[in-house]
Every structure is written in structure tokens, then in C-alpha cells.
Image (cartoon, rainbow, N blue to C red; front, top):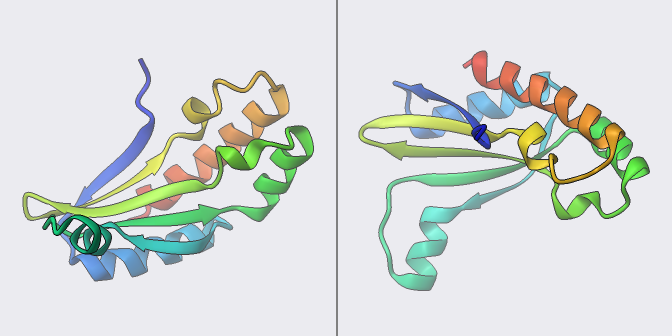
Length: 128
């Protein structure tokens, strides 16, 4: 079974890594639509303490538009989530693997768009 994520482990500060991946995503035409602080939400809702963990809700508008034209309910599966978290004194950046996530869609255009998005997400992570 193919992994549904692609990641890189870094020896870099957490907040700096968030800024760096934001810039790397922008270079690949992805924009972060929102940032969700999972650590803060779990503390607020469950009084649970975890290490730093943030979800970046990223979107490449060109790819999203192309997928939307091919499959109107596609936003149920979009955008391309990127996570940044701390574990064992390391900062990890992971992105969804769009080809795996979109594999359930029987639409060749969507699969082609997923492949292009995956290549761009990997470039962003590899550049860190």
C-alpha cells in the first residue's frame, strides 16, 4: 500500500519551519488558506497537551480549478494539507500524497491534476 503522505525530518526550529514551508509552497503556486493550531485546539477542547502541531490548508488555485471543472464535488477532498509538527526533538513536515488521496475518484483529469499537485508538493518539501 502506498503511503498517503510525503515527509521530511528537519533539525530546524518549529516556527521557522512554518515560515520556510509557507515560502516553499508559494514558490510552487500553493497558497495557505488557513493555519490550524492542533496543539492549541486539543488543549482548549480536551485539556490535552501535545507537542507543536499545525495543519496548513494549502491550495494551488490553478489545479483546484482544473479539478473542479472535472469533478464538481472535488472540494470534499481538497485542499492539499501540509502538517508541521515536533516529535523527538525534530521538526517534521508532511504533505498529503494527492495521487493516493484522489485514487478513489474515477476521473482521468482528476488523477492527472493530482499527479501534478503531488510533484509540486514534493518539490516544496524537498527544498527545505
